[in-house]
Image (cartoon, rainbow, N blue to C red; front, side, top):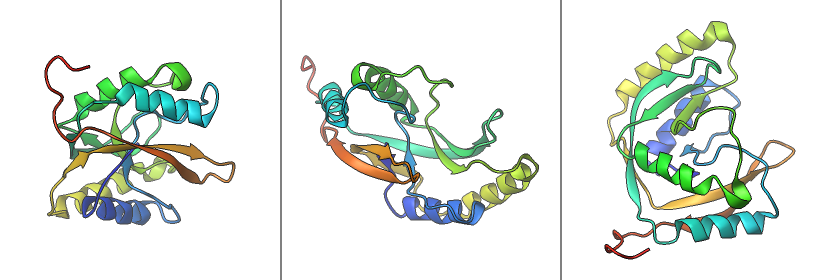
Length: 174
């Protein structure tokens, strides 16, 4: 996952807590949705490091708020940088972390999930109102990716962080 830095990150965490009280957020964009891994966590981290070695950092733009129709998850669409996330997902979803996902990968920032269907419209309206009030930049850098694990207590642990290159890769380098 790519964590979202402040001030946008703290705004999104506060908004998520307001929309879904009791939630313990850490604003991020998921790169590989939760999945079983093939082998050990160390093998998965090695696969991720090897696969993204030399790939450049890039910017993401948090755009408009929307809702996934099947799951009623309220989320922020990504604009600029979305295609880089889709490409990264495509190259990483193999080897030790390969998984046949139930939904097509759609990079986004989750704001509310597991909410009653009759509350979706009011929560969506409140989220859009608050998002319209945010006056700082909605563009943030993706310079590192964090490999996380969910525990049986539904707590997320950071296992490893992998850094992307700060400078573009010279033509011809792989």
